[in-house]
Structure formats: C-alpha cells, structure tokens
Picture 1 (spheres, rainbow, N blue to C red):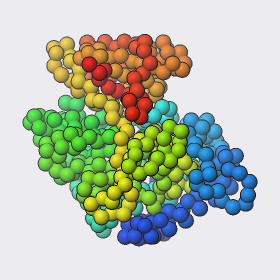
Picture 2 (cartoon, protein in one colour):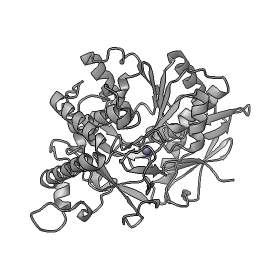
Picture 3 (tube, protein in one colour):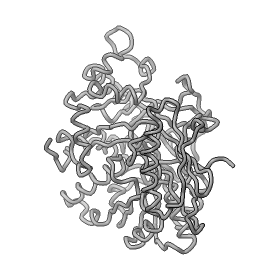
Picture 4 (cartoon, protein in one colour):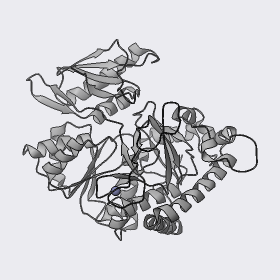
Length: 472
Ligand SMILES: [Zn+2]
C-alpha cells in the first residue's frame, strides 16, 4: 500500500472548527450545547446509515433518529471483533490497517491517503485501533490551541505548541501510540509548511523505556523548557532534580495518561519550580478535558459526551464516583464511538468551579499504577516506571492482560486472568521480555515468578491495576 507522508489539511475546515470552538468557549452552555446537539445529530445520522455495525445496533423501529440514551452501550471488544463493519468509510478494513501498522516507519503517515491511525496501549485489556479523520484532527488542534493552557480565558493567538521553544516528549515509543503519532504529525506539518520553522528541531521524543539515569542524561543534553510525559515519569525525574542529579530549567510540565496524585503534583512543582498542567485524554478521544487555573479538569462538552455509569451501566448522579464512563465522540464520524465504555471511573463535581468556567468539572479516579523500586545486585535502588514495564511486556510478549506485582525488592510476580489462553506460554514470553528489559536497567538479579492467585483488584472500582507493589 502506498504510504502518504502528509495528512490532508483543508484550511476552510480548520478555520471553521477553530471559530466554533472559540465561540463555544465564550458561551459553553449556549453555543457549546447547541454545537454539541448538532454534532450528535450528524454523527447518529451518519453512523446509522453508513456503518453496517451501527445499522444492526439501531434501536427500535421508526424513521426518526433515536435518542442517545436509547442506544445500547458498546464495548471495545465488539468493535474490534467487527472492525470491517465499523467505519463509515467502507475502505477501512482490519487487513489494510494491520498492514499499515506493521511498519513502524508509517508512524504519522496518512492511512488510505487521509487518516491518522493509532493504537491504544491496552491498559484496560486488549488494544484498540483508532482511525482519526480530518474533522477529529481539526477538533484536537482547536482544543490544543484554545484550551490546553487553561481554558478560554487564557486563549493565545497561536497554538500552544508554538508558544515555547524546546519540548521534550517522553513516552512509550516503538509502537503507534496516540501521543507519538500526534507528535510525528505535528513535526511533519511544521517541517513541510514551515509554519513554525523553529518547532521541528525543538521538539524531541524520548523513550520512557530507557533506564531513568540514561533518560535524565539525554534530557539534560537536550535542555527542554517544557516536559511532556506521564505523571509517574515526571515524578521520578522531579526526584532526581530534587536530589541534584538533574538540572533542568523548565517553564512548564504537562502530564497525562495516568492519574496525577496531589503528592506527585507537589513534588513535580517544587522540584522544577514551575506549573504542572494535567490533562485527561485517551486513545478514543485525545483531549477530553483541560485543567483550569484552580487545578480542576473541565470536560470539552461541545466535542464529546461522557456519561458516568455504575457497574450495570446505569447513570450515576453528580457527586458520586462512577464505575466507568460511556464516551460519545462527536468529532469523528468516520469511526463512530457511540456510548463506548471507557474503563475510567470519575466523579462529576456537583458544585461550580471557582475559576468560573461553565464547562463541566470532573475528577478522574482511574489508572493509578505504582512506580516500582527494585534493588540491583549491589542493593542500590532502581526505579521502574509502570508504563515502561507494561509496554515492555506488551511489545515484547504481545500480551495485554496481565498483572505484575513486586513482592520483594528483587522479586516480581506475573499474574494472569483465569481465561488466559495457554498461561504457561504467555508467562514464558512475558518473562523473556521482562528479563531483557530488566537487564537494560542493570537488574539481572531480579527474579520473575508466575503467580498462582488471580490478579488483585482495587476495592472500590474493581479495576485491574497492571503494575504495583504487593500490599505488605
Ligand atoms: Zn475550573
């Protein structure tokens, strides 16, 4: 299949999207909700007429459009299983997208000449494949430009990406993950159109899979002013900075992809002496919420609908913690997501936020894996980031459902669900991948055992945490 290096960018679509997003920001409950409703109607029309999968799932008889709450929630497994029936562009098939993804060099290329493709890392089970059309990319760009820096009040005349000179993006590399694909796309736009000629060389990607000391050296050499990474990685780097082993002069730290705890935020802010921007996104919708000046997350309700639900998928009222959420993505009509179950549990704050924004304020509860502290043969501490460990197993052993417990400073235990096909073979592959990863971190002494018990789940949400220290 011919690969196209550049995705299309229709200037009319981009300026209209930017204008609408700006208008919604000025009037979230008026213009914002009107735009949301119009986008939802257009999405439902297209999904129920062009996607065979959604045609089959259309609720009840009748000519009119169903209401959102009449549509049965959908799981990732069902969409992936019926991938060829899912998209409204009938040329999108599992075979062609797999062929495209097989080649790492296709990162940031235009699939079928017009789509950006990324895969989820499988934090909630099996990985998903998400095809982003031009409208969703325009929406993500508009949200980045207008809200990333703290909402409409802090709007800047150009995209936030261009506002500061040196960006270090530390993430899982080697796959087609959302962050890496988006950064690669941005680099190409900057290079090709020379819109922001200073941006291409000042935006560098670093692998979170490298040992922390090596990563710190690479970052020191690059000397970024903005660090973009996971909270656990920013926290580990902040501790190096606090100990004097790292001397970065940062003006901002942007974190996402995991839950940010209050302690992590304080450590990062104190060590680097700068503001920490949290944001909430997923592979299914890249920019779900932005953080305001009060440190509160606000939902982009003009571009997506999030319904907090309990275990039986019934609506949960504001103020209560949900079991999961149903996502309806209003930006992407090519690969529709209608009431798609996301594993995150969250709480809609019942009271208005002190910042004054009328975008719904939320608190995200999920995704809190641990940074493991292991000992090498000389009993020196070595920190391993949860996302790096999980990615090493995913990529090295092609496994997504597992749990890695640290039972002692030199012992790890791998657990699998009861329905894991051929658990012995899965363990063999995972152990080999882990040993390679541990060796690059100077941890050949760490033993990896297969757990007999089922994975531990967290009390309230029943969520499967993938990497953590066994409770003492
Ligand atoms: Zn606020």
